[in-house]
Image (tube, rainbow, N blue to C red; front, side, top):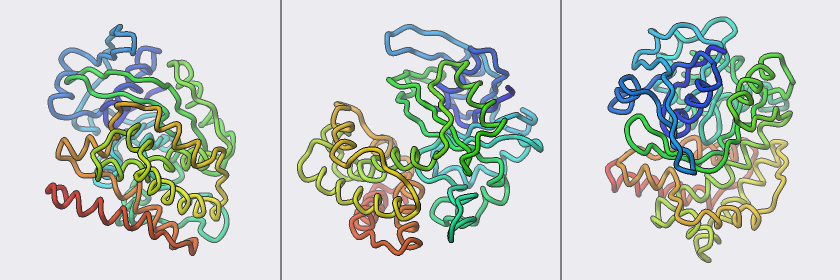
Length: 325
């Protein structure tokens, strides 16, 4: 497949590198020192065992130079997606897929959802409906990042555990296009099952992110320490209870319990959440698609979210204090 990975940070870089090594025609949109390093020296992946390998995907700061693609894998921070949507348009042909490889609720969430909220657009996720209008929900394929990693240095990605990239159509169909995408990801070594209920998978990841990401930004604790802390875990569990009620009202099935989900997080000793890292690096926090979206969806479902909203407001205040508003 001809695939552009838009955003070649830790997750996008790992996806691009593995797809390129598998023989796909891969390009990346990357900027700054990281983009320059990829252009000059290639994209290096450092495996958990310390081994290194390098591929040379085409790289550009200007998507229009890359031409139309079979698929665009968007691996940006969710709070950058709406502003970047217009620059993605030159990458799109009539059949191009837009694969949302980001944390949080995607812009297409209610596309082909069925029920009273079908077609609803979420202002907290997609301000001004930019992604919906410019990219179109009909192009969307969902995925969930069950991977870890970090940018070790410009042009190099330190890969952590996990190669999970389940994919699914918004309407749950096993289409030719989602099958082709899954086949491409499988050829690159990813675990990419086709999910009939991709929103269930999205909520399982969101469940941990919406609670522990902002909590760690407030406490500055690691993921494992916060999930294992009596008071932080109490707040996280209340947030997860509110989120579960919303998800269930919208037809989502949760395959595990709150204590089990927190226990999974507690095992990640020493790991800093992305929101904690963004705070340390002076970057805007991903509060819209990860936390505010849950409050907005709660209002749609008629379910109160007092704990989620309290933590959201504290996290916003923390961001303002750090000059990241």
